Image (cartoon, rainbow, N blue to C red; front, side):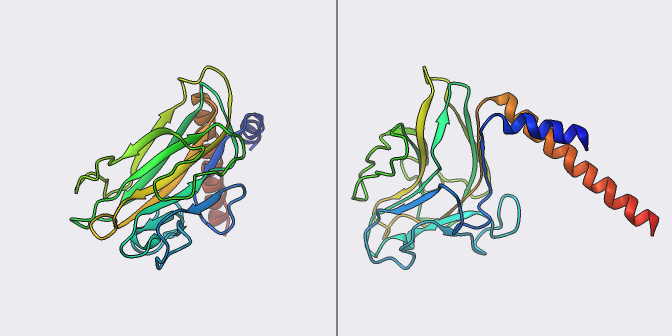
Length: 226
């Protein structure tokens, strides 16, 4: 256990973000903004995972979900999930998993955007505005191809190596689908990691792996002693 604790202490010295969305109503620092056309059945925007998918990790509903009902019908969807304020460095790496529902004829799209304006949550006021989140990092299915969004959990990553100095701001996950009469179904987002450098991710994995190995060994020893 001493080795695990040592790893834990070293990891805590370097800030990072790990979010599995076990409880979307209690995410410290996260912000949800729904700029979609009003009148949808899910006006809150992103919401707790449902039985449409099983989560990439954790309990079946421990993921964030957005769908075509974020907007009225007809309407345009622009549903944002913003991270807490982060200090990103050239060595920082973002990793996350996403999935889309396999519904032919109703393609999905997810944008990952960056704001360097500190704690700002300004995403504009219309479905097509981005406010302070003007920098597009990734776009999954940018041209809304019918089979362009993954229908199994798929990992994506972005390295901030182009930064010349540390940047304080937020990352925004944007479910962005115009005209939900011909586009949009359902997507899920899970297992978001933001680490200050690749080495931190390796140490985190090693520390957690060692902890779970010790827990399994302790359980086995208790069972053998009965």
